[in-house]
Image 1 (cartoon, rainbow, N blue to C red):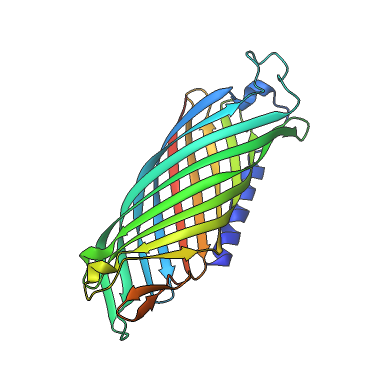
Image 2 (image 1 turned 90 degrees about the vertical axis):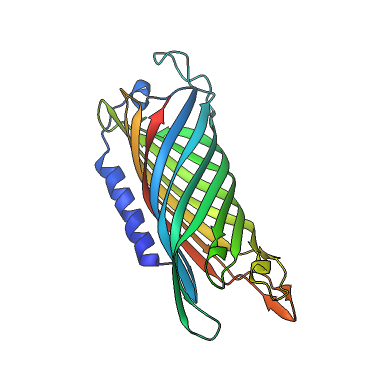
Length: 281
């Protein structure tokens, strides 16, 4: 994973967030609701890399989420309903795309192939604590939760290829900051570390023939990072949100593949950079 690119992205998000700050807001300025739905569409660049191969392409998809804050009063003129301000969020997304393969055969011969179909989905549940900071000018949320990510790579269409399916279970640990930059706009910055709990890489080696077996390699080490900055127009509840999502996964366990052969999933990285837009209702 390119650490310099990560550092530059995080610094850019922080600078954009700070430059948007305007102080002296009231509760209504944050456009909060006790329960709110989000519907969004996204497009992003995708890059997956192993030591001897990489896949790059473009994905497009959509997501939906629901955020519940028990402390929001019926009217903005009233005080918060609770001193302990909790946030519950459920969200899911899916996306599809095509990727190009660039790698080599076992004997070192270069090989490339274009137009492999991929698909991904993600389900997450988050629980957080809200708190006003900077004299109630910024609403901060610290949260953690549980996430599940799936990715399917239909590479059996290329010579010597086979379908692959990744499944990650992870714990999101993050922070979110909401500020009312202007009368009609909100700015929300989000930074998250994803603690990798476990993963499974299914490789359909039977697609190759030769008496090989489909195998499942267990993955136990890795981490993820993600961040975004959202600009929300309060009158129409429309938002636009640049984002990045990064994964770095270690070597998997080794499994027997048949015919005296053993296989494992090598260390790999995934980078996703894109933009999302949608509505809150």
